[in-house]
Amino acid sequence: MKLIIGSHVSYTKDEGLLGSVKEALSYGENTFMFYTGAPQNTFRSPINKEKTEEAKKIMKKENIDIKDVIIHAPYIINLATANEEKFNFAVNFLKQEVKRAEQLSINKIVLHPGSHVGIGEEKGLENIIKGLNLVLTEKEGPIICLETMAGKGTELGTTFKQLNSIIKNVKNNNRVMVCLDTCHLNDAGYDVKKFDNLLEEFDKIVGLDKIACIHINDSKNEIAAHKDRHENIGIGTIGFDNLIKIIYHEKLKEIPKILETPYISIDGGKDRTYPPYKFEIEMIKDKKYNEHLLEEIRNYYK
Ligand code: FE
Ligand code: FE
Ligand code: ZN
Image (cartoon, rainbow, N blue to C red):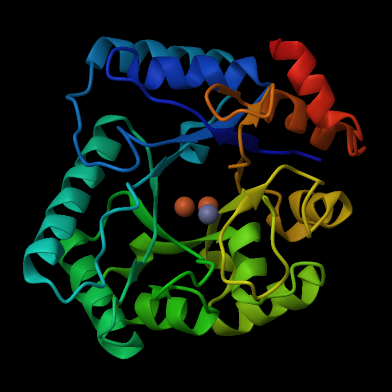
């Protein structure tokens, strides 16, 4: 079966998309996701056209379909906020992000819907809808993929019902889809281990045709913990076999899957950590759990 799999990769000011593609290829991936700058801030550098063209050439040669490549919007922008200044900033940033996506020929932007920070679910959702309508003024263009959230603090987008109420109230909602995150779903209280039931419920409330991408992460916490702490594949509470079922699910074969699992430290210290993706992807392709995953990663980078 066709498998579209990748991970979060870096995107630097100097190398841009070219560096991201090279990193993805070094892990054996055929798609990838990146932030157009630091995830925790909104400074963004202009896009280098030559490097972008070179990146696209490599993608063509390596059979990476650019429509499977994903941008993640920075998580500090909050469309749900009641603070007008912050709201306007979020809207303007997202407009710019859509333009950057267009310049890079990328079609999908993952967005954390937002946190209501005390004004309540209903008002928060209204703000998100208002914000998306201000960003998505054109009928055609890149798609905003609302991520399913763990329910940390006052996060919205933690239930299928909330996601649906956003989607159905945005005017150009052909440009709004969903990014499922397995760790977040678990932490929000959905039973990822009974994935067929989960998909059925999602289909009834939102519709399977609205799934744009899937973040594949194990979770450090039990179901409904509302924590959002990702774990390496097979080591968390969801487990390898359950994640494999999702990754190879017949109904999701056209959907890009992205790993956002934690980097590994060699000596237990947090000062220098290394990406696990090459090893996790190998394990996923083999469909066989590697008990010595962390040990092998540490040995490789030592
Ligand atoms: Fe995210
Ligand atoms: Fe995620
Ligand atoms: Zn997360």
